[in-house]
Image (cartoon, rainbow, N blue to C red):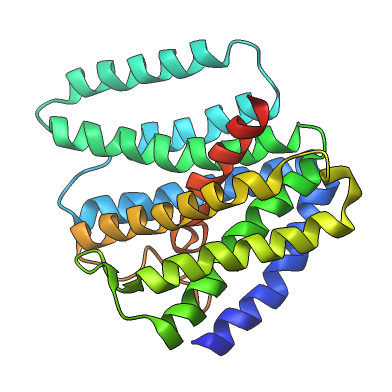
Length: 258
């Protein structure tokens, strides 16, 4: 498993860096693809949990919302509000084929997956957007790595045994500390980031990423499945790999913005 994870990283990380660096369509289209694949996985989780996702509307939102963000449409709030209203009206005409629980789970999928990934597009539009996106992934990856090895060697106290039995408080703290170390090294070598208090917000981003990981684990446990998919060797599905980022990216964006 570890060998597959490393091999996938060696292939995926250079591709990711290239797409983020190029920006434009080189970045927008892969992000939209990730959104659609993530929504497909969420639909599978939903079905296994006994809920019927309104798949056509989910995929519509997964396309329209990221495109509106990418093109920096000024009336984004109106588009989202109109989309939600369309969802409600569609539900009314399809009841009782779809239940209120189906409606709620469908909207959860749209906003959990689509909004999370869309904040990568928003980050790319900011000053130092390339480095800020790399910062998000460095925090997420270093947190995962630090938590994994700290938990392996020192872990004793269970963090959330009913959600993820292997996670420990020691691993949780180790992930935060290792992410701070990695960001410290990054800031030393990237001078344009020295004016941004990244070291100050890194513990918050690391914690958010770990909570995002636990959130996706609750969805899988609720549905009774181990992985969201199997598209990435050694990692599982898109949601398994990007679950932390879906919480971390929005938090980075708003902390820097405000």
